[in-house]
Image (tube, rainbow, N blue to C red; front, side, top):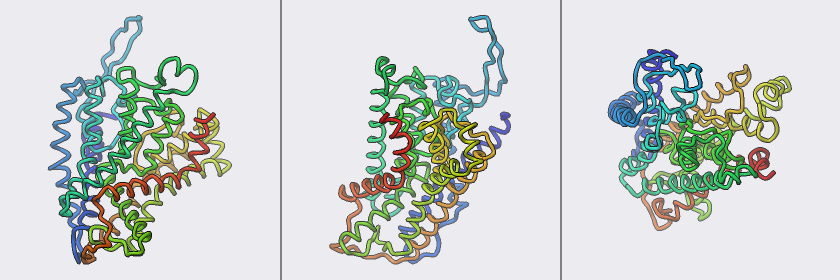
Length: 436
């Protein structure tokens, strides 16, 4: 696309998209904090504040840091040069640093160049690689603190961020272990699975970036996820299947984790025979229905899209004959990854699949729209239901939601809900391939 479209069109969506997620998260927090209220705030005020007070200033500083690190920022076209081998090459220019800053900060993903953050003009050094990772994680890991401040108890935010950090650390450790161990004679002789990795970053720089981009809703890549080992690629897939809540996207990660917290206190209440409460608000039938529907939306979209791709004869012929370049178990994983990425607002892909077909373009587009907007509807409905309630005083039987016990419960619910939903299809794809 032209530079004017990049700077005047796409960049606007990058800022607005991130600000919408923050506004929805703040609305849900107000639902917990307010008492007998029919209002959750003003969306346009929250959107404007998110852009002007948070996203624009931080993105400006981040763009300067990236320029200092070697990321290009100009309005030049292509520069044609002669190569050492006697050929010619076209070296591109463009306003990359400014686009890269909000792409990462807003967990938007994509890339100025087709190679994305593996391109030396977009991510030139290990230092800029670390800066881009920090930008992805900065707002999602900070929002739990805002949550604690707004509900008047910082310990609640600490409990949420503890669960996020635990899932992140375990996922990173597992993915790195799978990539370091490799799978097969060639990778073991090489010392690790380096296919698809950028040599400047190595295994650790690649797996840290991959974990960050799939546990947030970013989708940017500095290595080819399709070239990861079967189980390493499964971890990237599983990160999105968690619902991208560790720490998740800007805003969406926090409200996703709070939905899981509501389900956790409901389950805990059933175990002890009490009406479940969270932050002084009762979790009744209405609240648990809204939370349950929210949890079921993205798995339904991802699994239904994958199933229909193989169940409809005409569509199956297109998917297996045109879209899948790696038939067999890996081909199933590629299709599953595409729909999981679209449903969870991620955007990364197993690059061995061709999505530019009528079926894939249409189905993935529909899944993206439904996966983005339907969850927001139920989050806001839950926020309104909570805001209308009165505060319930804590008693001796109230489950403390700031202690390690609750952190462990919330961690367990997050993992179990994901495992029970996706385990069958994972067993048919990456797990089966990894065990071969």
